[in-house]
Image (cartoon, rainbow, N blue to C red; front, side, top):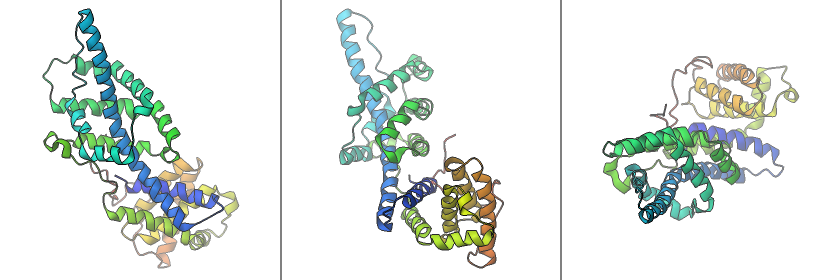
Length: 330
C-alpha cells in the first residue's frame, strides 16, 4: 500500500524536521521515517474498520427502532443496510481482524464520530436510493453502495480530516493518498474469497521499503555534496534568498537522480515539482523545475549520472514509475 508518492512526501517532511532538530541522529531519523510510513498503513486499516463500525451502529439503532415498532404496532424498519453483503465480508475479514486485535484499535472511544457519519449517510441520496430499490439484494450492488458512500461522504469529509489530524501528527497529509487505496480495496473485494480476501500489504515489495531507506540516507549523508551541485549549476546561488523548503526538496531530488538509475530523470523532476506546489512558496514550483533540469544536465555532462533526461517537466513522462495505483480510482 505504501507507494513512492507517499514515501517522497514523508521524506520531504522528515528531512525538513531533521534539520530543524538540534539533536540530529541518522539512525533515529530513519526509525522515525519507517514509523511514520507504518502509521499510514494503520490509517488504511482504520478507515476500513470505520465501514464496519458504522454498520454496527446502524444495527444497534435498527434493533432499538424494531423493538419500538413491535411495541407500538408500527412498520418494522428495513434491515437492508445492516445486512449489506460487502460489509459482512469486510467485517469477517481475517487480515482486518488481525490488525484490530494486534493494535487494540476500536471506534468505540470515538462513537460520536461514527454516529455523525451514519447520520450523514442516512440523509444522502445514495443511501435513500439504495434503500428504496425493490430489486433483490446482490453483492455487486452492496459493494457499489459502499464505494459511492466512501467517495462522496468519507473522502471529502472535513470532520473526519480534522479527527485524523487531531489523533496523530503523522496523519496530517496521509488521508488523500490512503483514501485511494481504500477505494481500490473495496473495488477488489470478491465474494468468492469470503473471509480470506487479501487486503493490500503494507509494502508492495521489499524494494519500496529499501527505496525509502536509501533515499532518506542519501539525502542526509550527502547533503554537502548535493548542495555543491546546486552551487556549481548556479554560480550566483544565494541560499539566504531561497525558501529553506526549496533547498530540502531539491536536495532530495538530486539524491534520487544519483541513487536510483532506473527512475527516469523526468519522473523525478515532475514528482518534486508537484511536492513544491504543496510544501513551499507559490513561486517555488517553477524555480525548482528550472533548477532541477539544469542540475540534471550538469550531472549527466560531468558523468555523475548516466541516464537520459527524457521529456521536460510539465509534459507526460516517457516512462511512468509504478506507484502502486495500477487501477487508480476515477
